Length: 249
Length: 314
Image (cartoon, rainbow over all chains, first blue to last red; front, side, top):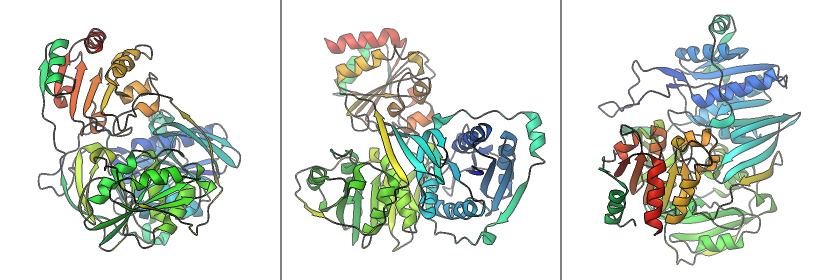
């Protein structure tokens, strides 16, 4: 195929312990390390492997957000993407707006495959890929743990609650990836240098002719209720006694 | 008044327990009239099972050979066609619901509320973000259709004993043929279903191998418990993916959860935070799992588990 589109969202790094601001107005993000959403990194790795197998000619990475998302796109280019598009939206957009943007880009770029992470680890919405597929009128294969391309179709294994489901989809299609699809490569220093020369285009959200969907109002943020630390027993007999006391044995 | 449509989940023959949990969420929406939609090939038994659940006014059965398998691309346009007149569409936050509901929401032109943990008002809900580290209160635009998935672990199943009417309905929707089901590799097990079991025993990376995981299965069988695993144990290949408990696996709320050789990464803890009693067995006394465990036992699991097994078994 000619082209694969991959979405890269800038999110708070996986290892950061996120905290709610003391006034409950949001999440503390000042000075916090930001990274590519880990699921999106897996999506890009898969696209690169498809290209390296000779099954695609070009991998284009897309981010929607503020100028700072250039960092994540540069990382994507260093991993091996051919070019990058930053949709200037000032910040993150809601899933339906994101899906409308990807639809416009998929059409403009004549993408035959759009690979996205199954969810972003900040808002945990798990919506954008399914919404894009709906608006595009194309197949979706969510939670993918294996992708096999066969010309005009793809066979995809999905991680579902009861096991592994395999479906076949016609291309173009949207695939959202799960954790066990692959292990993303590390970026090497020479690749970071090379990535600086690769094209990174900015498109204003207004120039895409996309109408923003109404967001949900966020009325307040709070930390989850903490479980209380319980007791430590000395041995198995103590454990059994404690379980009996709670009526669990 | 709210008119709520709950989308039933099933495997072609049996209604999934997630449906009764979704109904519990729907029943908390003020002044709600609740229907259940069953998309199936045949599906009369499934519809009858749904009709017995509390709070259900009507069951709408959409019987179509295309609905033999739960393909989102096939069901979403039918659901969108059925949505007219409803204020809320609710599906479970299982892989079935997570696949289907956003596709339907997009066809209907609205964003979705993912993973509802609590209902505050008809358009106001709580949900968790950042892998369970933050709870956000959100409000959908007034008068707009609410499409949501329900975190099943946050709700108790509704009871049975109802006798709602079952109506076979036809919907005017174009059903695509670009997505085809091939097969399902399901772990066959007589054990209680992980997502609804009252007791769950889980093993982590400390088990060390797939063979060693047998002691977890044995203990679970003695207790009549379901079996889960940490992401580390699944990634290491000790057990299949469907056993993973945590933010990216299954979020569960058993009365008793026994974590064996699991250190307790935040992603895992998110999956068990609604459990009744958490027991942790781990050789590292500083493991984060002990911060949330009601009962902790520090020691070698390969000595403790067989000993526990023997006491319970006798």
